[in-house]
Amino acid sequence: MNLNTFGQLLAFEEIPDADPNPGLYAWYLRIKPGKSNIKSPENFSKALKRITEQLCYPTLSMQLQGPLSLNIEGDLRHIWYGHEKNQFSNQFQEVINRHEEREMLSEILELTVPLLTGPLYIGVSKNLQTRLQGHAQLIQTHQENIIQSPHIDGEESLENDKNFAQRIIDRKIDPNHLIVSVVYVSHPHLSGRRIREAIEAAETLLNRIFYPILGRK
Image 1: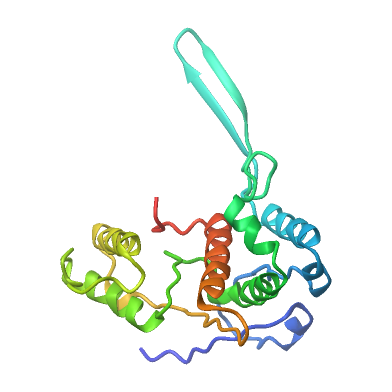
Image 2: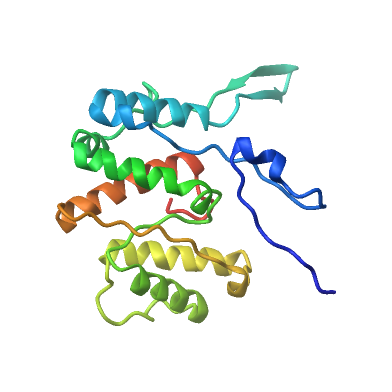
């Protein structure tokens, strides 16, 4: 059977432009901190907290029963990243305290939906080609010693990649069914270190919004 399929991304105001054909759809919330909020770390932080709250899991009703007619019920609430009980880390706050990083982080976040949403795993690298090739090799061979040379992003990243590959194997996921989406980040006036810090901050936020099921534990 040959299917005639294609993808389309429509803004809310473009909904009437959708073709009147059978198909599937998914709604996404774009992550747009807002240009005016970039001007100050306080407003930017408030905007991010508003977004993470909007994307948090709904309250779950729970009921527990035990011996002697013990009956306990109540609600479980998601303490979203940025909540007063789950505040932004100091490292994350340091990044958004700097104007250039706020601009970069805002641009990254606006590109993440739908490119990086609903992922199995979210990662960062200073060389995406090399890092992704390492992922592929680990998955294909199932061997922990496949990368003989030092890992492009360090030993901790190598261990994370090995764990991800093992989870792919454990779940019997066919590597041929995997796809990867990338967002490239550069800045003409910032050092490689500051760019790295900004994309790591984006990774932190996205992991705590979307909770990739094969992300690092």
